[in-house]
Amino acid sequence: MFWFANSATGWRRISCLLLAAALSIGLPVQSGTAEATPSARSGAPTAHDSLFPDVGNSGYDVLHYNLDLTYSRTTRTTVATTTIRARATGVLSSFYLDLEGLAVQRVVVDGRPAAYTRRGHKLRIIPARTVHGVFSTTIAYSGRPVAHIDPDGSQDGWIPTADGATVLAEPVGSMTWFPNNNTPRNKATFDVRVTVPSDLEVAGNGDLAGRHRHGSRTTWHWSQRRPMPTDLAMISIGNYNVYTSAMRTTTGRRLPIWTFVDSTIGSDLATQRALLPTVIRFEERRFGPYPQTSVGLVVDPTTAGYSLETQNRPVFPGPPSPDLMVHELAHQWFGDSVTLADWGDIWLHEGFATYAEGLWSAAHGGPSTAAQFAQLYADNPPSSSLWRPAPAALGDPANLFSDVVYTRGAMTLQALRQRVGSAAFFEILHRWTAGNRWGTVRTSEFITLSERISGQNLGAFFHTWLYVPARPSGYGQTVAAAGADGKSAATLHTPHNRR
Image 1 (cartoon, rainbow, N blue to C red):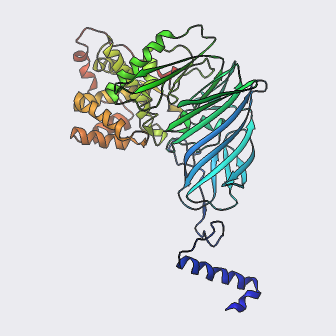
Image 2 (image 1 turned 180 degrees about the vertical axis):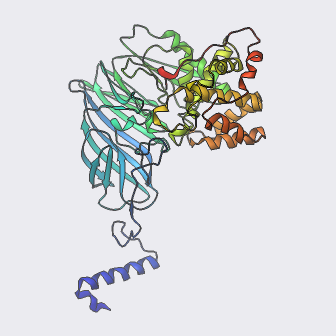
């Protein structure tokens, strides 16, 4: 059959035969050949989220982000390189990342220059050779980052400030400052290096791994060793007063504290900084061991006007109240460690953090949680917007941060506590945080866990509270009994100043 060698067809025929022979005896085959990867396909430009179907991507899982960013105070621009280590779920001929604005200069995949195209916030990468297993992608890019406008009209992503910028990326704004797989179900570790003029400071997630001055500039290196979704990735550049200390958790672990307070605040936040360890230990006793490697606060006036539970150290637009600290720090368990897999399940973050506020109030001289939520039920008739849409059936992403998610979500937890008893309820919370630490979850999993621990069939209960856009019946009958201690039930804060 060697007579085929004198024609192009013959060479292809021999190549196929040699490939088959190599495979039959287990010899390695070069991954870039078409014959070696007959099942190569393109990754999908969506993660199929119920509320944000046009962000996130499929075909791979990011394992680690390595960001190197230089910020210019004069032009308010950035020059950056992001290297992504990922694992393909199949053989990929191309794949997508999310990047809004910013100009891409170069893409390299596994050491070879790669082609790319842009359409909206989708960056399609076509490597020189197909990728499978673990692969590396480096993107060089630059420009002036802009804020993303959410469906409810609020800003997220890169928020310019008077002396720098702060990133508040929930839900989808992370793509305004680095290319990524913009879905909460793909959590990864991070190393972030930010170079700024030496009179500025940089807050970030995780632990401060280094700070190196070179001439008139300083590079801050933040290392996040716990898996983190992209919407919680944060840097904050500004003129800060930085406070460092440490605390002991309830398990005796030493926990570093880095707190950044904007120099224009006019306060050293001594009260809030002293309260922080107390809040952490309070929540540990109710939710389980603190899951992160460090903690702290970032206080920076931004035009966004809301707080955010960025992993390790939440960001606040001004000196936070105790209940706001309780809320955002509770997210270190519910939202940061245990993270929704789909934005339609955001009550698993906000309802739990709001319930933490109720627990704090009840333990510090306020009415019981039963009294608080029974009064809220009584104050909101069936026509109230509190009851529609349902917390786990939002439909419209503009409802993501509405009161149905925060208050009705928290009320659902109180109703569950009254249904199964306090002992079973707190066992559910502890098992939930321990069993899903650093993972992603869905509402159905919480229902299954609640039924297993309580020994009750709770399907109809959760359906009524989470999926029916109407006021659940009967709950208000507990108002009189719950308020029998004579204390008036305090109304929980509205969600407009927090996330």
